[in-house]
Image (cartoon, rainbow, N blue to C red; front, side, top):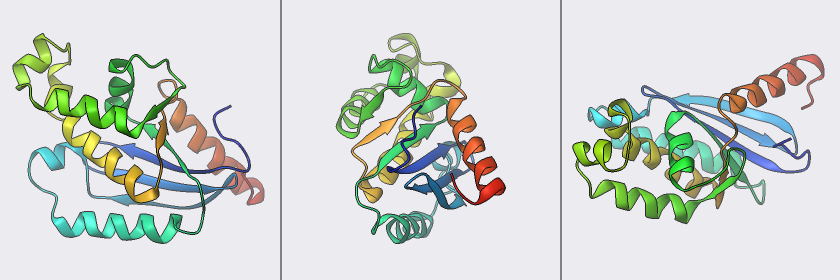
Length: 171
């Protein structure tokens, strides 16, 4: 229901230790790659500038010829960002809306993020870092919006794409 056959997507799955990117062009999985850039690794200062450069180059190489592209996000942080923006599950979230929300969150200390904004303690310290990953990937791919599927649905979409690919090399 989220993937349209003739559209192009970048699936961004942000975890604590890494980010998995998958490029889908006209309904067909093109390529995917895991990068050692995760929200916890960023928090702990374990991500070197060169890691970002490698990710940027990979996204540019794999999306520059695709034309318009939408992002699909998965992970608890993008779900929380979408809910804080009042979005219903399955709706698209604008790049600029995420950027504005993150600016508001960033001026609060961890305690205020928990008590005032209602973030869980395990999310309050990493949401800024996770959003940096989503925003960079979106910017580099030229995606102005990110689809935030229902919880767990993004994994199902990618799984379905992979199953279709294995069966007949077409998604």
